[in-house]
Amino acid sequence: MNCVPEVSIVIPIYNEEECLPHLMATLDAFITRFERICEVITVDDGSKDSSMPLLRAAVKTRPWLVVAKLRANRGQTAAMAAGLELARGSIVIFMDADLQNDPADIPRLIAKLDEGYDLVSGWRRRRQDRAFSRKFPSWIANRLIGRFIGVRVHDYGCTLKAYRASILKPLHLYSDMHRFLPALCSSTGARITEIEVKHHPRRHGNSKYGLNRVLKVMGDLLVIKLIVAFADRPMHYFGPFVILFLLFGGATAGMHFINASHGWREQSIVLPALSVLSLICCLYFLFMGLLADLIVRAGRRDARALTRGAAENLR
Image 1: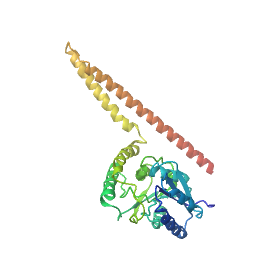
Image 2: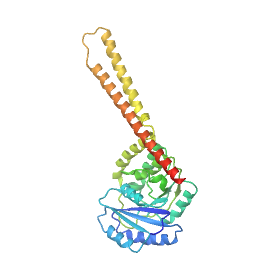
Image 3: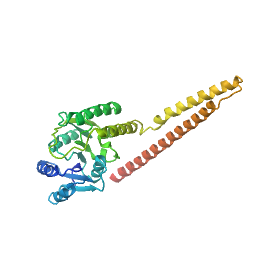
Image 4: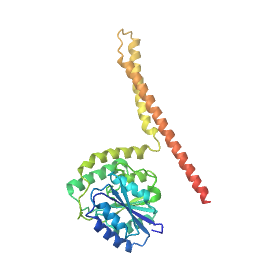
């Protein structure tokens, strides 16, 4: 493509050989009707079927198509991060390759961005999936994430979302962090909304998700909570541990001196050992908090320097 695209659609792909011909036909029809300059970035996540040969054939006749490949299967988040690196548009949209997401909803997502929002999340209100293995775990996860993190979105798991690239590109994505993007974007001050989108039943290929991802999601949820709550003020996280161990160490030391002042001949080593251990833990968390705070301050200083440099270049 010679023109710089305004919209970049990123589609992670893993073993979707049955879906790809239908996906390309759907995208062909969508691109011809779409009023903005657009690129579609497909990222093959180490597929073991014929997905990559099909993509190589498709890119030859489609100037708007970009094909990338990961050398090994790294997961959906890694594929999305790779596509984000290649995206040139000021608007980035993620969608699945299985055609359960409908590209016809993309103009509606962009229209919401034009109203001043930074992230528009799709809400699969009438989701066409199996109740027990897909809908029920998703229902629980959405409520836990919303309550735990404080960003109220009905459908965190819906891949179809539209972002301003300026908000999304600075984020570091790993593990299964793609489902927590509203929370990560919210921590940077992004304006977030959601709209209902269509959701079609999967007609080709097999789903790559199941109940086995629940524990991984719960672990990532804890990490995201810590990032959102304490990324800018790490001492607020380490501080309670400092106070806790300081109080515990003081209490055990006091009990030891009370025993000694009463002239007890047999003194246990337990209380002095606990006092020393508590002091060490107190100092450990104190210095960890100070180190984390220095790292955050250094990052802010670098960010301000880059901002000043960009502002000077614009003059």
